[in-house]
Image (cartoon, rainbow, N blue to C red; front, side, top):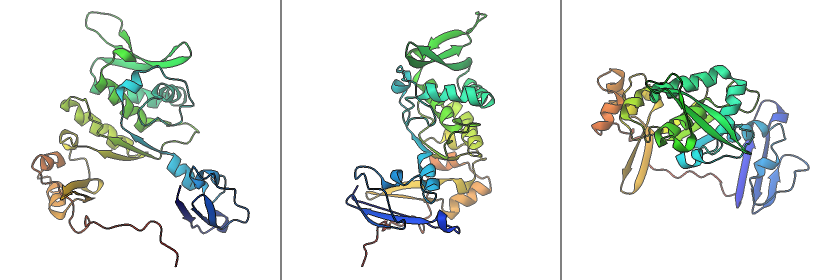
Length: 291
């Protein structure tokens, strides 16, 4: 870690603090006897016990960013505390087990949404296989009184990805553990039938009432709902090798607010564009050189 700098300001003096680490050496700090720097990890982890830095540490530790790999979800998984879902979904059985134990109503909500996206689904349960965990999928089959059971290695990519999205959005609800504070998901509609995108949009909007949700998507179907507020959207364009991201321009906002088009329709027409005044390239100076 070449350079790390942190400053926290608060009304209460004991809730304020700052430090700067350069090349593994503590260059400045507001506390008299700072712990030594580990050099190979963020110094914030070592001072997380101080009142000034604990909220920041918890906020960063409570962020989950996901690009689900069905192959990892299918693998037999080692049990873990299940406090936060791994980026690829590799501990989903533990997280789902926690959710079922600590918030059965939320686990039921996950199962209900899964059944809407994948018709015939009865549920998805954690299952112990020796010292490992996996998932058992239950599906209603015409002509059979009881649902059929499949282990995760026999379940489609789309179903596993949807389950990953649902568990990421609802994980930790109702528990005393540190819940996810921000959930970022890359292309949640991946491997899904376009007709299921509407249900997925409803899930994202509902979950956003309790956790901050950031989603990247190329799916017009996912945006074909006028319930998505224009202020919640950011448009991305690439021009001459530069990627620009900003809130929507005035024209896009007006068409959405007047319900002339949905965001999905504007995306199909290539008219969902960022505000040019807010997307001009600028280089942020994260670490100012001291004079």
